[in-house]
Image 1 (cartoon, rainbow, N blue to C red):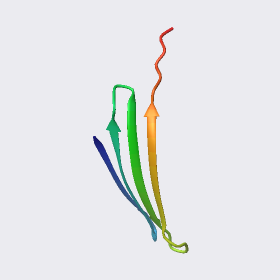
Image 2: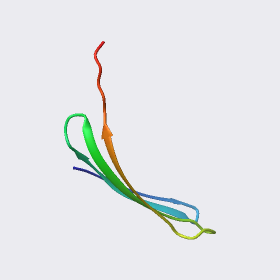
Image 3: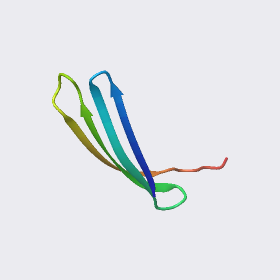
Image 4: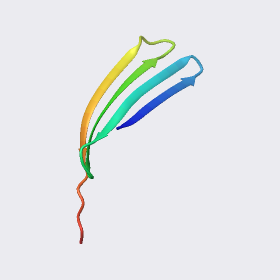
Length: 60
């Protein structure tokens, strides 16, 4: 499993991201991430994403 963390600030705005990738095979993984964005003039924004990725490989 691969964990990912990111924190960012720009003037009075901040962003925090937390996620992970979980490999199911050589070409397949599932992933999830959570993001929280705080802006000076906007209400707090929170996002959650779940996904599935499969890379196709072709040989010509």
